[in-house]
Amino acid sequence: MKQLFVNLKRFEVSRSQGGLCPYENPKLWIEEIIEETVNLGIGSLNELQVVYLVPEALIISAQEKLAKYDESSRKGIRIGCQSVFRQNIVQGGNFGAFTSNFPAASAYQLGCRWSMIAHSEERRDKQEIMAAFEPGLDKNEDLKKRAASAVDSLINREVLAALEQGLNILLCVGETAEERGSGTPEEQKKRTAETLAGQLKRGLNQVQSYLPKQQIVIGYEPIWAIGPGKTPPGAEYISFVSSFIKDEVKKLLDIEIPVIYGGGLNEKNAASIANISTIDGGLVALTRFTGRIGFYAEDFRTIIGKYLECNETKA
Image 1 (spheres, rainbow, N blue to C red):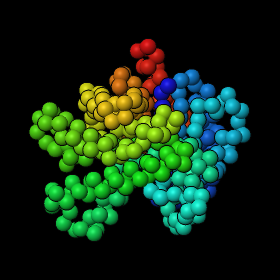
Image 2: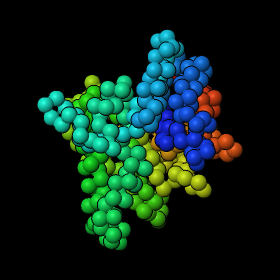
Image 3: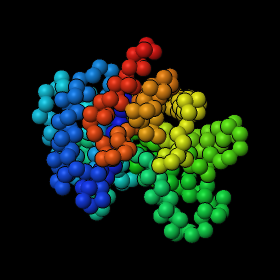
Image 4: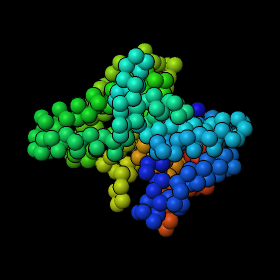
């Protein structure tokens, strides 16, 4: 089973307000995406699961639209959320005093069975909060390491809250340009391995009791390569990292775990990513990077076609 995740970020903001949504009413947009996804046959493809990671306000609209189609045409499509809060609503405990936060119970109640956690943008947000508390953070190596460990600890609490609620997880890990450093490829790989090993060990702490009933997928984000003008990593580097992640998780949990490429699966790289044996899928955000930039279901279907074609050829 190959797994493709679609991070719709804050794409619900209309173009008139500086966003990417073609409609003033984002409900129409998410319903159109679901409709086109089903009509393009994406939900009925064998051995493929697609998870749309949707902004909170549009989860119900996406779920209701998807439910209108017969099971055979939507069997491979799931709706998930973009993260959950580190505390949760529980029987006999906090009944919901989480203003501005999104507990796992809320996601589950709305029909989500997947949550992405620790996307690079979420990690950066937590790091910025710590830097605001300690302005000299970036200049002190010891403080930076302690802050990274604290971020992973908060992420682990989110992971456990999601698992306890019954959600499956896409857990993102990745190294920044600073963490990767300079020098030879081998030196960079060594520093990358050290960074990812720490993120995995801390992020996956105490998850064993939830497995294999629930699923954890690891998304690798080469943070240093994401963004306009950045050069993405080659297949050899992605193969090294994904193999390392699989081996490291095997040591930690004694299970095989899927690893997807989270650096942005697109039409240009779909074939090369599909040819990496240790990669089990990808994370998509934008599908069109020029002109009317945005996410389009027809472009997504093209990406899927290129990805699956290479997998079928390998098989």
